[in-house]
Image (cartoon, rainbow, N blue to C red):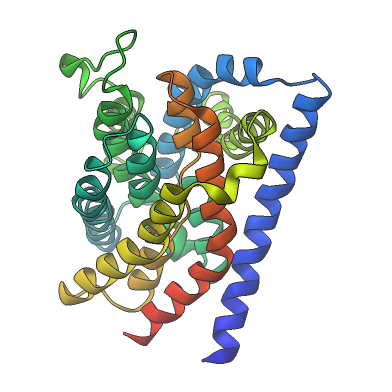
Length: 314
């Protein structure tokens, strides 16, 4: 058990370190005025409306349809919904009482994890293709909630960009599912002239988001990163309380073995970089968002292996 724990810790550390290098490059680019925070803000819509749909379509295109994969897809998607519902149920009342301007950021940071940039690579390293497939369905659920509930809480109180209830089903996440799901269900294989560009666009996700993260961090007061009390509360919820609640609930529902481990990886992922992107898009404090995301990412080096080990014990 100790050997497994430290193996998982090393795997998680490597993935976090890779992301940290990209963040550092973004940080340096901002300081050298090669890729600034202003440019990052302009890149938000590229990630929202082009890269995100490409990721989801890629996930559907990468799996062959069969009765077994359909069953696993359904279980994985249900687990993705479980992560978000429990996250909302636990985090919302805690930060709702704060009544602060940044409470929306802390709610979002506690609920939505880095499932695309962190969970998928970890699942691949620990579980292989089975873990990637399971986590891909969770990414789809993440996008549905992120682009509906996430937009709702981050746009609340924003006079310039109020939440449009008519568009709750018209967002990059849901539109991508409408496009990608039939491709999976009917085993449609796109020609290389279409499929390859989708692959390339999806590959932009992690590097572009991390570079943007670095520019926002460059413009934050790093000295205060460890002084934001609410960031610690958010980290505790995102990295420990919510993952444990998700794992125990899923185990009671019959999820076990590698599926439970894949779920644990997804549930314990640190705060999503979308926290920073949404903060920028809806005129929230990107400095607070960057510091909160950074804090949870640092702590996740220890918590992710512990959560994975916990899931393997059940």
